[in-house]
Length: 355
Image 1 (tube, rainbow, N blue to C red):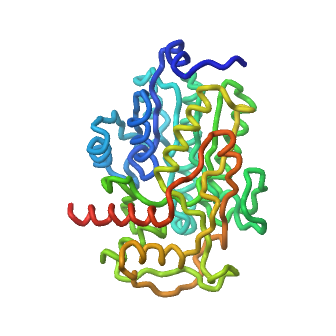
Image 2: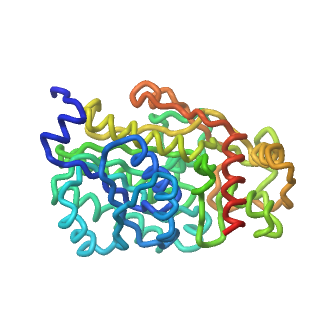
Image 3: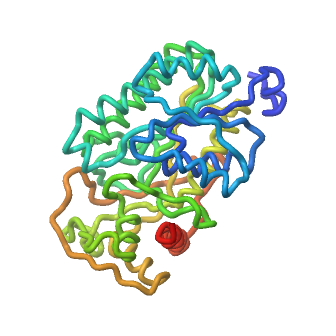
């Protein structure tokens, strides 16, 4: 197929809107910031604020100087979802972040995760077909790989059994997208398998803000250090790793946001080898829980109060990415260091204290 410039593509199709689902959330909001600051697209967000709040758009405006048009919609409601697409006729692509993401909560309440994560994806894909929107980016996860024995993880690494209902919804989500791409060849999709997003915007004005008690490591560290949490728990110190704690591939949220811009441009420039692509988003480096805590101690001068606990249901022992494919195809790689991740997260936490 002949390639055309992104600008000519938009002019020809008279469409210039990117719709971001879950746009008030952690990764969604940082991606909107990058879209507003580095592209000419019009941005529309859908979020029902189940794990975010509408004030996120004020923070986005504070950083970018731009308002974001947004809808308070539950994407599991097909009729309400369709209404948004009937209004927003200029959508050229969708970035689908909206999903519940807590591993531990999904173990405790699997119905919530199966209902929300699968139904919302199906409804958005149906709208892609109904309203002839060809470009779709799916927020996936490294959790799709399960517990693996060979590291680093490649995109071709086979799935093992999902360790949590959350992880299983991402496995199923990717399979749904593959089946849609086979049946409906007008769809062009990319699934981005995030490893462990952390940190905050460099300004310190936007970051991770879970409504419920945080389950991700870095906000637990910063909230413990600032006194919101009295004591944190390191879940598992007897894994077969170099220091007994879980190993993860931490990546700054802004690096992930930039990857979405690269993926979007990749789709619009018709650079895909097929209409269903998959890329890992990670740094390629494994960092243990104890190493992450030490990094925070170095940049803050504070030692978070923690105890050692039992392993947590749903956690995998160790995982980190092989990043060659995203470098080659998307011209993307993670650039922000672990210490910088901790520094921005701590700046965000201190800014929250002032509010």
